[in-house]
Image (cartoon, rainbow, N blue to C red; front, top):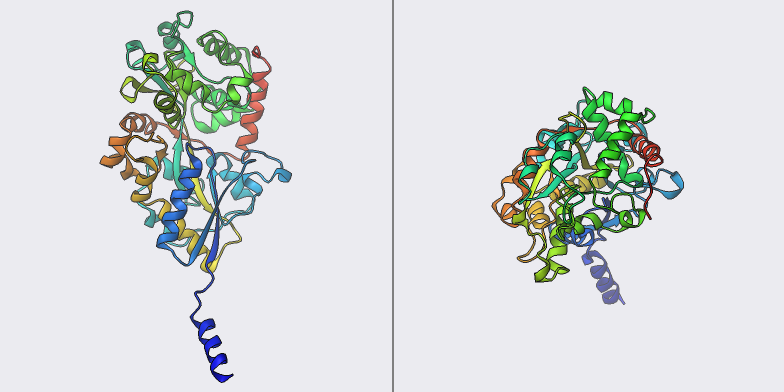
Amino acid sequence: MFRAAACLSLLLTSAAPMPRLLHVSMYPYIPEAADAALTLKQGFEETHPGVLLRITFNPNYYDPSPAAKGVLYEDADVHEIDGIFLRDFIEAHKLAPLSPGFSASVGKLVPLAEAAARPDGHIIAIPHWMCSDFLLYRADEKGLTGVRTLPRLEAVLHPQMPGHGLLLDMAGDALGELVFSYRLGESENVAQAVTHLGDPPNQRLIESMQRILALEPAGFGRSADYGARDGFYARQFARRTGSAFVGYSEATHDVLDETATSCRHEDHCLTAGEIRVGPWPFSNGGEHQAVWVDMYGIDAHVHGVLQADAEDFIRYAMREQTYRALLAPAPGAIPRYLLPARDDVYHDPRVLQAAPLYPQFRAIIDHGVVVSAPHLQAKLRAAAAAVDSALPVLH
C-alpha cells in the first residue's frame, strides 16, 4: 500500500501543469482569416508551450448594440480593434495599460500607425494593420496615373464604353467612408472633417456622390445584392468589367484570387503585373487620404501572468517572421496584401517577391492622415444612411 501511494504521489507531481488559456478576439475581415488564425495559434503555442491560445472571430464585430456583444462589448483578453472604436474603448475604460517599455519591443512602427495608437500622447494599443481606400486601375489606362481629383477622373473614365468605368460599392454602410473621404477633401484637417461628418448632406455632397456613381458601368454601385457578395467588385475588376476599382489594399487578394481560381485563360483576367495603385481622395480638390488602423489592445480585466501572456502574444504577432508567414504565402498561393504596421516588413525581400505592389501602396499611405474620434462608427453609419436615402436604388 505504501508503494502504491508513493507511485500515485510521483504521478501527481510529475504531471504537466495545465496550460494557461489566452483568449484573443481577432479582427475577422481579412483574406483567409481562418488560415491566418491557425498560423498564429500554431506558431505561438509552439514557442509558448505553457499557453493555450484561443482565437475567436466576432460575427457581430461592428454591431453597436450591447446585446449583440460587438467588439466593444465582447469578453476577451486581447482585442484586435478597428481604430474607429479606439476612443470608445478608452471612454469605456476597457483597455489595460501596457507595461513600461513594451511598445518598444514590437519593432519599429510605421509613423502613421504609431500616431493612431497615441490619441492622448502615449501608446494605448499596438498597431497591427493599416487600411485605406485606394484606386486600383489597369496598367493600360495611362490617363489614370497621377489622377487626384474628381473632375480629372471624370475626364479620363468613359463608363459608357464596355470594360471601362469605375467599380465600387455605393450602397448602405459602404457609403460611410466615401462620405468621410469627401468631407476630408473639403476640410482643413481631420477634426474639421469629423465635425462636418454629422452635418446633413448638402447639395454639393449629394452631387459629388452622384458624379461618382455616374462613373460606374450601368447596373453597378447601388445594388444591395452585389454589395453583400464578398469581394464582388474586386472580382469584377479582375474580369476587366471596369477600368478601375476602389477598395482597401487587401481587395487585391480578391482580384488575384479570381484570376487564379475562377478565370479561364481566354478570359484574360488581370494579373499583378497589370495592376497599378493610386490614391482615393476624389473630392473636388482635396489631397488628404484617410487611414484606418487595426490594433491589439489588452482588456482591462487582464493583469499579472495573464498580462505577460497577452503581451507575449502581441509581441509574437508583431515579429517580422510572423508578418512574413501571413503575407508571403507558399509558392502559388495568393498574397493577402494587408498593410502591416511594422515598418521593416515593407523591405522584406520575401514579402516583396510575393506581393510586388507593396511599394505603391506604401508610397501613398505615407501621405495619409489617421482618424480618431469618439463614437466614430455611429457617425459614419449615420452619414451613410443620410446619403444612401438620397441616391437611387438598384435591385
